[in-house]
Length: 210
Length: 132
Image (cartoon, rainbow over the protein chains, first blue to last red):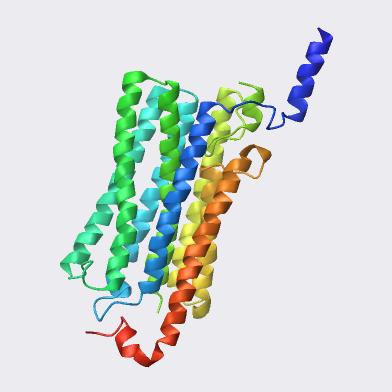
């Protein structure tokens, strides 16, 4: 009896060596795999950022960033996305303690904030296109629409994913698979916010400096 | 539930899993601190870009520092990437990702700047800023 207790104390005390611990549980592996995917997505965005940084001044005599971008609009988009990231965090806390109502509430708030962000962005694109600043107009605008547009596309996919997860949650409850997917969704959503930090800095703030 | 969860943590997970009630309140605190820091850094970014108090050529560097700081805040407080032994794999993958991002960005900028420099003779052809 005593020996067993002591053994247990030792195991807890010095933390198992990674080679002795056996295979990791599935949620760890799923999270790690999704993390790798997110990093590859960020690498893809880095190529779009590089293209934008090279072409930022290549406006071919057309409208430049300083004339097109409205900082108040960008500040509102930033606030919406940051708050939706926060409410997504609240949602994952509710998932950890398996509270249905709080989870759905967090998902609804996250969805609405994300959708409002998307509406503002589409509105901005529409205004730019109405001014003749289409992607075909100059290399600068091609790079701009490719970069900001693919971020917006990611947000759209994220919103669809969130709806799908809420349907799964209401049908199947807090099953392991559902919780894993919700966890991957929150990773995805936070990563999108990180990319947006770079976008508003590089495109909207640095891009309009004299 | 015990031995594994002490050191095996997926990205985005809280490093430790204490009792349910405690966890919710401490997790709430972590996200709230992260939100406050992110708001402060964002507001500072917008202020730096619009103020005339700061020496103009220093503004891009300031913005870059603020953006990197905010990405760090997001990684630590929202994605829960830590330096502990429990997220070694995640941190290694992140480090590799940062390396590739750095190579793509810095490489493209250096090569294109160099090309621009060496094509000076044909600047009318190469300069995309010129009206056509």
